[in-house]
Image 1 (cartoon, rainbow, N blue to C red):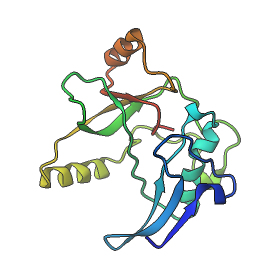
Image 2: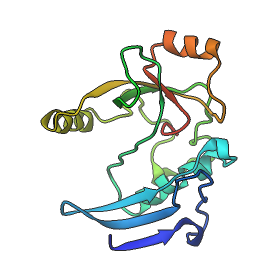
Image 3: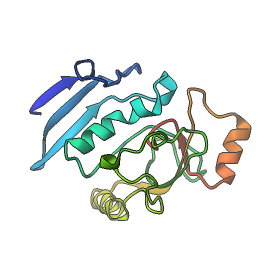
Length: 175
């Protein structure tokens, strides 16, 4: 770790309200690579706009970050999964969340209508699977269904999510 900055000290940066989310941006080096890590994040269900939730990603782009690794805790929908299993997201379904690209387009952030046929890099997915296999770590690959939260799904919603082909459901990551 080379530097830690509290979210509250970064202009326009939201502050996490979820227990266990420390609320700081960490700059450092990992295996010889410069990295930026977020110790805690914020969610749409906390009352933040999608623009606020995605602000850190936009900031990282301006800092020169070209590769993003996200993690989350999610609910399993695939009956073959067990509690605690790891899943790499290879696609997602997002009907209920507001798209953060709505509004004025900022060309310096990317295209107005990005191609979503490969929202998650196949190259990085394969690399993660290779690393997991080399370390005897069971990892699934699947589709993530995003909901706004903060409530969990009703039984009917759960059945619908399963029927639509999702393997996991959660309240973050996609935006």
